[in-house]
Amino acid sequence: MAIHNIEIAGYFDRLATLLEIEGANAFRVRAYRNAARLIEGHSEEMSAMLSDGRDLSELPGIGEDLAEKIATLVETGALPLLDEVEQRVPRQLAELTRIEGLGPKRVQQLYQALDIRSLDDLRHAVESGKVHELEGFGAKTEQLIQAGIGALEGEEKRMRLADAEGFAEPLVEFLRGVGGVKGVTIAGSYRRCKETVGDLDILVTCRKDSPVMDRFVEYEEVGKVVSHGTTRSTVHLRSGLQVDLRVLPAVSYGAALHYFTGSKAHNIEVRKRAVQRDYKINEYGVYRGKKRVAGKTEQEVFETVGLPWIPPELRENRGEIEAAESDSLLTLVELEDIRGDLHCHTDATDGQQDLETMARAARERGYDYLAITDHSQAVRVANGLDADRLLQQVDRIERLNEEIEGITLLKGVEVDILADGRLDLPDEVLARLDLTVCSIHSGFDLSEEKQTERVLRAMDNPHFTILGHPTGRMINVRRGIALDLGRVLKAAAERHRIVEVNAQPARLDLLDTACMLAREHGVKIAISTDAHAESQLAFMRFGINQARRGWLSADDVINTRDLAGLRRLIQ
Ligand code: DGT
Ligand code: CA
Ligand code: CA
Ligand code: ZN
Image (cartoon, rainbow, N blue to C red; front, side):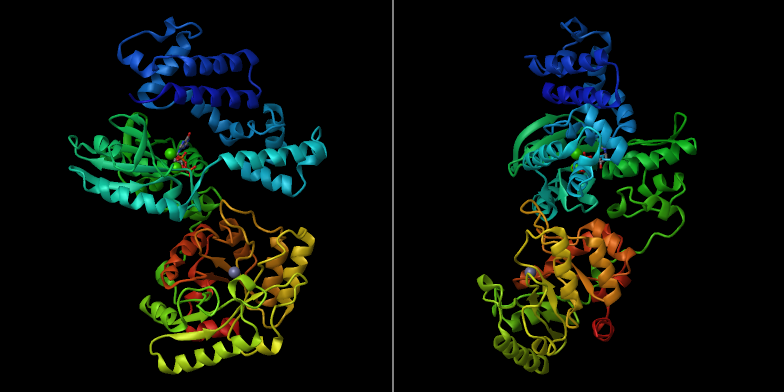
């Protein structure tokens, strides 16, 4: 049984909503909506009826046209009309109509007036007060929308990338062990290293007789089998993570990898270029007329549209296609470029290990340096350091640096930015250090104006080196502080301050788009793990993911420098 009635209904519902947003004929919209209800409520699976050779158009309310569409959907998993509509109307707009106070008309208005295409766009527009200025919206509606966004987000379960990895890697191992399996790759947002994933999209190439699909749905972590076919199956793991698995012929592998890596917005642009060159691209290959001309590798797919291969992290239609076209794609920063970590904690405050253990762990990773940055006194719950205790630690670090070979410890602190923008320790103490990570750990709810002033004032302190976890957001837990990032980055550039990409999987702060902005402002970045245990030094790769999604090269990142180069940058 391939596709369930509830899924078929979902397709028709989305079709109806997108058509409605587009302003289509009301009868047409209603026909698809009614069909969705009918299919959803039908006791027999449409797929089973079809494989029994029954004619769906005999069902009340299902005409020839609908019957044919359902059959196509069951056979191919696609609804061509929906694909067509989604070329014109962003798919996520359908989601937005679920928000209280937002009907199709209003969603259409938001899209046309403010280019709002997603929940994210809408949230930003609401937060920057653009929505209530629209005709017919007003402050009340804006409030209602804001509450509605919160409710919808609460429903939406996206898993953090690092958590998803914990489920994905053993599953991939398992699949690789199944007889006849040749290749297993995870595509989708996972391959793009997006900070959260909605589901996993796994692509498999295998011999014809491989039992991979049967083994997949029997995998011990599977909680529910949503669909089980020969080329496509969908399951929910017990963790709640959905996994789509597709089996592909090797000749289509590159085309499918490109298609299912997405993002959708990127794919659409690439497909447009193909059309301009008289090709057609889909998940099976690149075609001229009926003839497949490419599709075995991703490289080939890009070549046919006149582009070099684009790293998956960039495929968000944020200018990567234009950059690739003009041959100005950067070489993105890699884990191997990293020479040290500039933010970590020890058991002097809330870290789990002592100085020496952290130093050895960093050396084992092949680093040249590690900055010790325990908390300052304001963070009482973490047993933050006052001036005396910090100076004692500075002495210990100096002694350890003389004893230990192969790594240099840098003297630092994670000093709180107080509510008024002062730093939490006296200047003469900070002057003894190699660097400071300056962070906000309280007063999260100041207005944007006050919060921004607070950070700017902190940056005026000559001992300010790095702005730690700049927005304070925690993925799926709390939103970041209100901060005018443009102003903060401009000030950071003027004062030669560094901004952190915190690599803790729940933080990933700066955001990818903010990294792009930092780069535009010429602000240098530190990718730091904020490790509270030696094992957490391994979080560096999550920070690298985020930085790559933010278009950063090794040159943009200060901890790719050797010690001398680093010292020059932080004075
Ligand atoms: P996610 O799962 O929400 O984190 O995000 P993705 O990007 O993994 O999205 P998903 O799982 O819905 O689909 C995987 C990829 O397949 C997506 O990035 C692009 C491609 N794709 C899916 N549906 C469509 C579609 O309707 N049109 C086009 N052009 N591409 C699609
Ligand atoms: Ca996905
Ligand atoms: Ca998927
Ligand atoms: Zn912190």
